[in-house]
Image 1 (cartoon, one colour):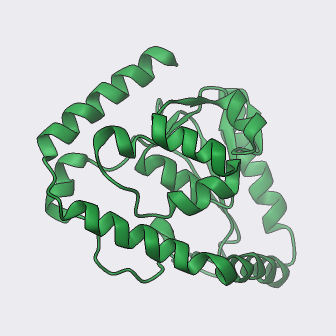
Image 2 (tube, one colour):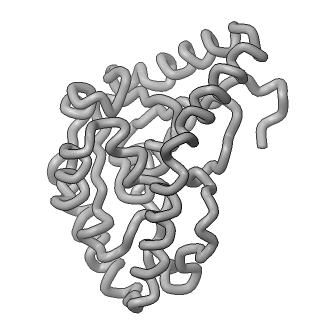
Image 3 (cartoon, helix red, strand yellow):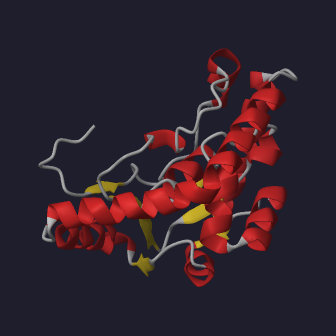
Length: 211
């Protein structure tokens, strides 16, 4: 967890990708947690503002990591895809809650059911990202926004973030529990890590040809 001196965090990936998701060869070993308590995605209840600087493809679990950020600044090279259904796994970090919140239910279903990639411009049009900037300007812009947050009253920022989180909890807890429960049920059907990895590599190759 960050120290009180950390007032904002910028999260990005190593070029050329933001995050291609979990190594699915390990999924059969580590599985999905059977604990259906609300953990709020990969970062739990992080109380420091988190800016996602999306520098390239954010796919499946990587897409969930992006959605767990408070807001997103995207490079022109950013691409997003929910390929859970393509590879035969289910989300467990809240994607079925956070993606509809970001783009609307019908667009979220389109992305999840097709597994198609979403380019940066469309992501901006759909409200998934806040800004699209030239690739070389991405970190500078994200850092600029982090500095603006850090320059505000820290207690005020913390309370504002806490209020957003509290309001989300009023209606979202059961939806998060349902996703986690369904992910665990799906895992119990049996997972072939080699087949899932084969599918994943095909998706990565397809994404590269479309960048």
